[in-house]
Amino acid sequence: MNPDLDRLQPYPFEKLAVLKAGVQPPTSLEHISLGIGEPKHPAPPFVLEVMADNLSCLSNYPTTKGMPELRQAIAGWCERRFELGAGNVDPDRNVLPVNGTREAIFAFTQAAVARKPDALVVAPNPFYQIYEGAAYLAGAEPHYLNCLPENGFIPDYDAVPADVWQRCQLLFVCSPGNPTGAVHDMDTLKKLIALADEHDFILCSDECYSELYPDENNKPAGLLQACAELGRSDYARCIVFHSLSKRSNLPGMRSGFIAGDASLLEPFLLYRTYHGCSMPIQHQLASIAAWNDEAHVLENRSQYRHKFEAVLRVLQPVMDVQQSDASFYLWAPTPIADDEFAKGLFEQQNLTVLPGRYLSREIDGVVPGAGFVRMALVATVSECVEAAERIRRYIESL
Image 1 (cartoon, helix red, strand yellow):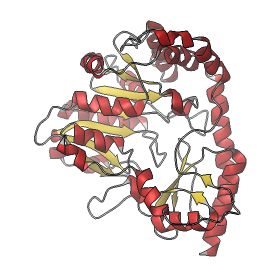
Image 2: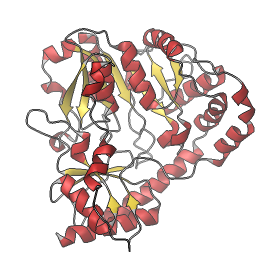
Image 3: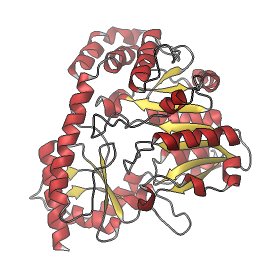
Image 4: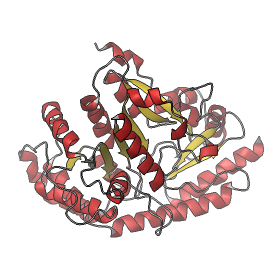
């Protein structure tokens, strides 16, 4: 077997299971999980109807490139959402449907990295663990950039040595960030584009939380949007990843897309053709309906906004926790070690949160996730409020 498989760490939820093993929570309290970022809002009924009405498509092989109608729907959504201008995303060259961003991030890394002894994949820390695994399996080394409170949980890109940029083949940006919810502003995205030009690396922006934001008048900026403002209609060296999982509460449909530089997507399509990654036709048809509708997304944001407001009212008297820039996560500092906090919370309140250290690596003597827990506000409003009240009781008991 590939020896790089031995370099893969257990996934955070495996570590969480070990932490909780043998702990007996109170049976008088029903378990509530804020641990996994799995949307629990109902899927849009009209999307389910399209899916159900087209189950006969199971008789047909889907193409790797996807239906022209789906690529057109995605291109149109990108143009509207990121103010790119009509006709500035070519559905035949700038877009590929994928089976969720996790699959696409991993696969694109395998296709994009040139195997050299000094190859680097640069990623934020804490981070979505697929960046690390994708780097190792592509024959590269991950290089982590700490995301610290003093920088608003955005990496200090100015502090990165030139030799790291020279060795960098892919830079992963996660905006809005998982787990912190921090958003890169437009000036930072433009700075990263300039660095990609100077050092000839690919800039990959994971934007799967881009549609979950608290202020309707302040949408998170996107990488393609930064390209458009710079007049880069070819999106050179820039790739974005988007998904219906969070936007449309469809995590089980595994539907998303990759978009950007056509000169990178063309060889990636060849890779995918061999890899055998194609989206089922009924999923493609349902995805068209989802990308073409914004009403359900607006309602989704409204529900999350209500949950954040209700939860923060309960927690802020006992925790220094703030509304995140975007996403459905609270990145909350803990009064004791984050893993002990998570364990005690489960043991005393039958509530699951994810220790931040499980999403981090130690760099320069710092584990940037240590001392934080990630709370995914994916349950119902009443469950989230109940969870917040349990957290408050636990903190007050310490």
